[in-house]
Amino acid sequence: MPLKKQDYGLLSVIIPVYNEEDNVIPLTKKIEESLDGYDYEIIYIDDFSTDDTRKNIISINNPKVALIELRKNYGQSLALAAGIDYAKGNYIITLDGDMQNDPSDIPHMLEKAKTEDWDVVTGIRAKRKDNIVRTLPSKIANFLIRKATRLDLKDQGCALKVFNKEIAKDLNLYGEMHRFINLLAYLNGARITQVPVKHHARQFGKSKYGLGRTIKVINDIVLIIFQRKYLQRPIHLFGNFGLFFFVIGTAINLYLLIIKILGEDIWGRPLLILGVLMVFIGIQFFSVGIIADLLMKTYYESQKKRPYAIRKVHLSE
Image 1 (spheres, rainbow, N blue to C red):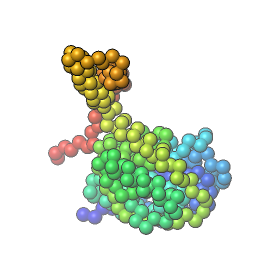
Image 2: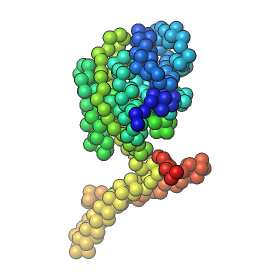
Image 3: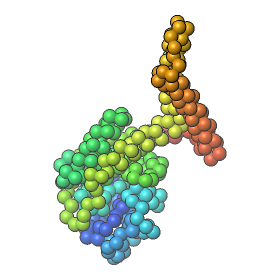
Image 4: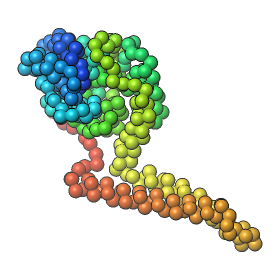
């Protein structure tokens, strides 16, 4: 039986903006045209713009349009977090405010999420209309994420995404983690799929991205992988390092002990210093792992948090 537009419930369209005065009004009109017949809200988050972005959003004067004004420029991740916290929809849709994403793709993405039970449907900009300054960092990020994780998505950087509300509310965005929303959701257990979407060249305003993102991308990937894979069991990471250094240090010291017994002088050898140092480093890693493990147990128990997340409960009728 075909789905009706009312079957999706309330939709929350979240758009972080910074100095997009010429884009917000036409973008709102395109969203209204694309979501005609749906129950939706449009949430603009103004990240302390210095132009007339806020004024133009207010001038729209539509009860379905909400404006969240941030007190200072926090960046796109925290702007998205503010919008997600405010959102009331069953599905949460994110897109950029530069009009490069096309809202007409939203209905198809919603249908795929609903009918095929996906937690996240993300776009692939098959014919991306950006210059190399924007595309090169994205290609590097996509390559690094594919190699460092099992998440094989062609386009990590597409802002047009459809989330179910449970996954979106559990993202815990901060810093500059908006670049890795797919990875964050995946590491939280989300089922993710990708669909081709349209992409347009920017007509108004200036891009806020550049090659400087690449180093930040590498650092953020390392941080995310550690937090999501080892936060509940840090001893598995630090313990492995500790065991590696301890075994090598012990082997070196046993070798030196044997040649000492055979009559050779080992005092002052750099290898002796290395062996002793590696044993101490191994013990240090074990100690850090144990302390971190105890801290995580205290964290979960003190806040009565559960170290697992339930996706869905099915009951027989």
